[in-house]
Image 1 (cartoon, helix red, strand yellow):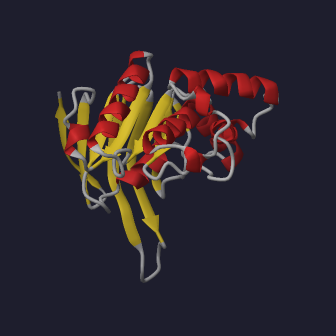
Image 2: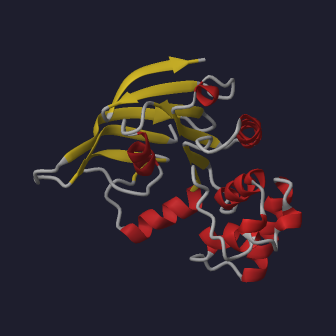
Image 3: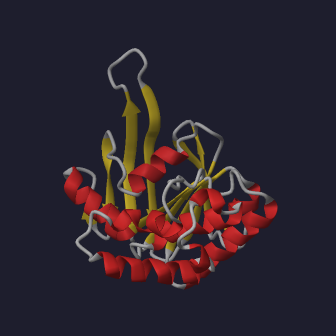
Length: 228
């Protein structure tokens, strides 16, 4: 298994009056090349689970294994390297920086690396070309359409050549046409061998033929599973 989670619990404000249990005893496995959806309402724990699976945070208890390595208690500098080298993230708000160019946005995840800037730019141009927006490389984010911003955000997720793409509510602010485009892009990435994990409450996404397995969440727990 590429990713394995065992008895994950995540508490916020532990031992305080406003303690919140965001995840409660979640166990799951994700195979390399799989496309999986986490569905459930807002507050069900989807985003928290994504953050743990993607090495963005650590569980309060339980453990996460990536490629047979326990990453749950690694120091941040090692966790950051695993995150940078293996995961690409697509957020529902895109989170692009408006005052810099599209290419500069795409290169942001590479900045901590030792790769020469010239090599970064070559890689960035190739990713933008693959997504059909290389002509927008020097444009500012506020000059892009919604679809172009979406492709820029995906390009940023791909720049580190990750094994896993994690998408958190990626269609939340998209119309139906752009949602179709997004799923088509993700299907192409999966055909190239990428593992894809999507958190969504959008039936268009979790009922899409691209999705092989759907896990349902409620109140921080897994409450159901469906394969197709």
